[in-house]
Image 1 (cartoon, rainbow, N blue to C red):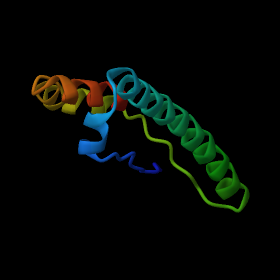
Image 2: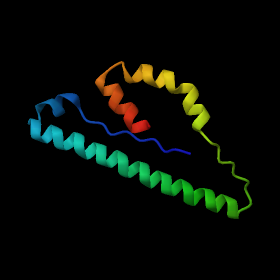
Image 3: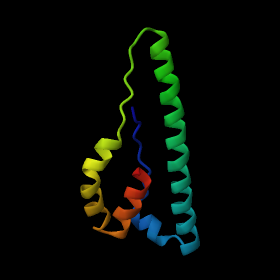
Length: 92
């Protein structure tokens, strides 16, 4: 399970901000992304335990083989741009 969210800012507004505020916005967004990921992961664990208590059989899949298969594709996308490399790092 995974929750998806978006952090958005108007590009014109963002570009009008002084550099120090732009850096603060970007740094804060990265912190929020990490905190959100932790919260979702913890919530998923609690939800799985609740489902098990209610009798559901839950299968946890080893994703390592899947990661290995798609690794060349991820490498290709990482090399497309600096921004893409940063995004891919967040997904690792």
